[in-house]
Length: 406
Image 1 (cartoon, rainbow, N blue to C red):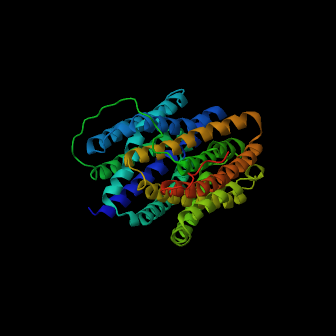
Image 2: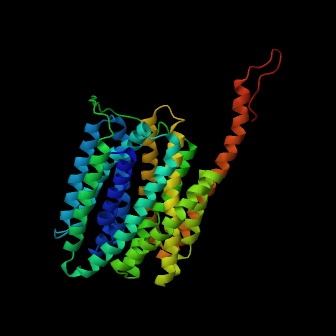
Image 3: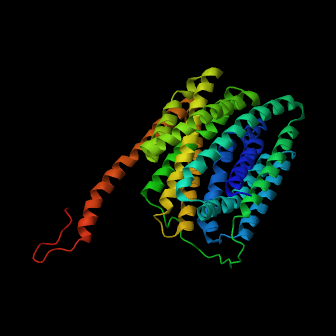
């Protein structure tokens, strides 16, 4: 099988998993009677456990086929337990527990996958591959969300078994995709020695800033579930339309975004996506019109797609500057997932003290503050660069040595 075919087929299967398993998972949790706090936990616990896995486990594991497959098998077990737990009398604690187990194992494959790609793919091909993967995902999520939304509403009489059957299809998809990518991993056997490690070894200012922006994005996720399901009482099909419109618009505009990244630079396109999302969600809590929400969700979907492609491109480019490549990938995923988990918890804290429309306003302002925090950092970097250059040059004999000013 061609390398590109393997990569794109894995992208298709993983996105089928996203549609069949995760697109309506938080909707299911809300419909099972979860409190606002439990909905917030469903958003924050998985990335927090991903962060713990990356901090203390994943970076110590060698990039081998055996390790990659072991992570996939544990992930598959957790998926199946999540799916069948919906049949229990009180399923929410079990869903959250096995979702956390899945989060620990999924980081093994997700952190090792970039390292595998760097072994097989030329650096200049990353923007093309990430963009094509995103388009594949958008097409599958767009068509699949509509089909699954229709299916869940049509068979709502068998709730929650209608969700169970959908989740089982997602289990098969993710297992097949994992098996494809495992063939790219080295077959050699390396010893595994687990010791206490120090996380954040390869973190730099740009990585922390990207994680801060990620936290801002994650702050909105639980609020959207609560607003759509508990406040507006939208059906599964109506929620699916949000995914569909975002997918259609993203498919049309993502190639344009890729050309803009090549012409104007990845960071400028990333900045446009971050600011665009923050401003779009500013009035969200005041809007009750489904059609206006549909327009906003379409724009937010485009910004999220561009943000993902730009972030992955930045990650791959920055990796070349770091000596410990696998540690860098682990730290990058660690910071991004920690941002996701902390952001969701922050939104839950906000929701406990103010109405949901106020949460949207505060989060939009916070996201803009997070983004523009890089300006001071960039200014400091520019001031530090000449000093570093001059410090590295020899001082002429008889000239005073440079001194720091108070």
